[in-house]
Image (cartoon, rainbow, N blue to C red; front, top):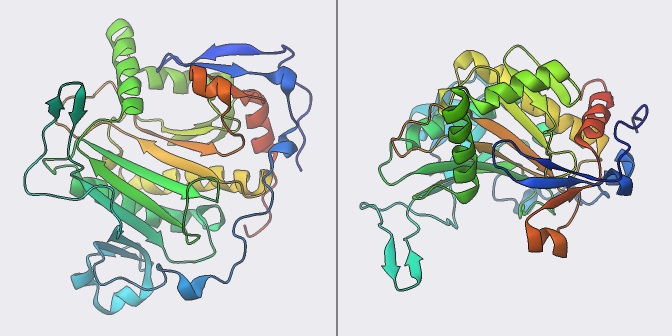
Length: 355
């Protein structure tokens, strides 16, 4: 395991506040564990021979999008023809959707103390073809095909009248909520703006109102100058452990160019973003022994309002701890490794040749 040269923080604990959300977190370095203590026990995948009963091995007849390795071309099923045999990414409707489309958009119904809205929207699954190869083990070019699929589905669903927000998530490992081993992401387009996103938007708007600048751009400038929490960067993206990390080894990936909407990522930015994502997951894979994790994209809503003050990004949360009573009772999360130490550890991870 890679080692960290010295301890950065000597305090027993400190509270740090997220400049965007206003949330407090506890960095309890006095209870510190070595980075190697966070390594996952070998549980996932339990065995690598589950193809026989895997639902994602064959191209589906109802595929909404196919991306092949033929120069990253993408097709719908009816245009793909023989090229479909070379498919690397397919997008299909979720067979057990949490949200389903409807001709008319739902309205919030108030009944006394109760408020509800019908679950109208879209729920899709984005599948990569290799059964036993997570994003951490893909090439940047292969990851770029997955990113392209994300972008195309965002572009397709953003104009939908009933959709106010599109959530792109990826669950990996038994502690993440993943029920199928085969690597896949999910896109869920919903008729409301989620509370976590609302807080992020409100904090961004508040900072913009006072400073006439993007808080995330300021954060990027601060992190790239200080360097203490930066894990990786290229010309277009920066990867860092947030100053007020909510979890041990939390990672965020930001585009250096200010954009509010993920779907505006340019063709030239797809590979650099894929490189940043793949590198982040690779150092987690080798440094923490393939931990369970969740990642998701935070982007501007699709409700037609101007969110020019926002800055899209991707957040990765390794599952290194379990919430206890303090976390549930206060909403304040405790991390037992400083993000500076986590970043130093992840930067020191040696990636095997060919990985």
